[in-house]
Amino acid sequence: MTAKTALISFQVHGDDRGSLVALEDGHNLPFDVKRVYYIYGTKTGIARGFHAHRKLKQLLIAVSGSVTIKCEYGGQNKEYILDKPNEGLLIDGFVWREMHDFSPDCVLMVLADEYYSEDDYIRDYDIFKQEENL
Ligand code: T46
Image (cartoon, rainbow, N blue to C red; front, side, top):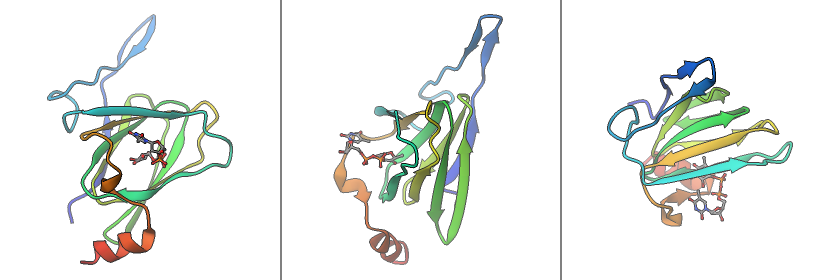
């Protein structure tokens, strides 16, 4: 099975003032971006996600702080710690994802290849497993 999750590193333009990362469609992003959202102020002990998408491609970047992303697809379980503003996790489509262990300063920015649509979500784990095995 083709990998549906992958870490991508971005070039850092650094100088004595600090650092800058640029993300551009058709250059260093794995898809054209239609939507950006960000998750922040997550309370201690709270986990988010617990769903899959039918088609959506997303790139998750912890631009501040850290978060653990748990992914499941094709019988594989993968865990990624995002803690670098110059690193993104690509999640391509049919992957069960959970977000855990947000640091208090975590700002998780997500780039997506489609507009928000609740129809693309599978929020029931049993349905995810059933559809995955079709
Ligand atoms: C994902 C993980 C990584 C919108 O109105 N527009 C949006 O673009 C999004 C993403 C959400 N919403 C609304 C829907 C809910 O009423 O914001 C509320 C919270 O969304 P949700 O509970 O789905 O958030 P998370 O953190 O569980 O999941 C989010 C994304 O929804 C999801 O696509 O992969 O982050």
